[in-house]
Length: 109
Image (cartoon, rainbow, N blue to C red; front, side, top):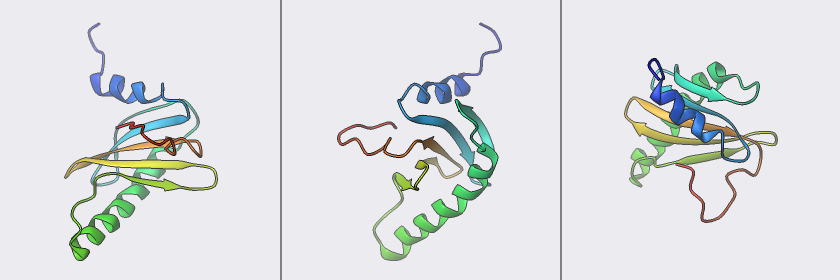
């Protein structure tokens, strides 16, 4: 179908994973490039804030000599985040219910 957005379709596919509430492609400036959500997730605020978190983690890797950031999960009482840098200028952020990323042996990215 003409006019379909293949990036949105990719983002929407993550919503099929049980517990995932939103998938956001975030620019290195903290802006939403594309997103899909199944709940009332504030994608703009999350995007703006995860950039600083990823920058700090990347700096940690550089300063300690342990390498670049691969993926990162952050668990809060009411929300989990999975951050996966794709490129120097964008990253995937998955927003999920608590416990979603705690399944051993499963990879979402």
